[in-house]
Amino acid sequence: MKPFLFIAAIALLAMAPARSQALVDPNKVAPEYREAAEKRRAEQLRQRECALKADLEKVLPRDCTAFLNRCLDTMAARQ
Image 1 (cartoon, rainbow, N blue to C red):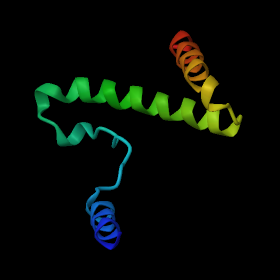
Image 2: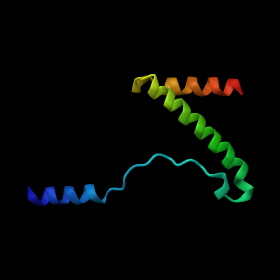
Image 3: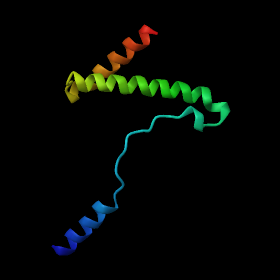
């Protein structure tokens, strides 16, 4: 039993922490890709804003995808 616990502890310590996707920084990409990076960053900001709205409205996890899709659609319609 002790070897199993030892191996499990080593495996847990060796795992890298999961992180969310970082925002794209258009200034750190090559000039030919800067326009695409700016569009990606704008999309990431819209997604984060909708995720924050979902958290504030306490949307259930099962309804979160539908909420985020509706939120992104309404944001796209406004533009």
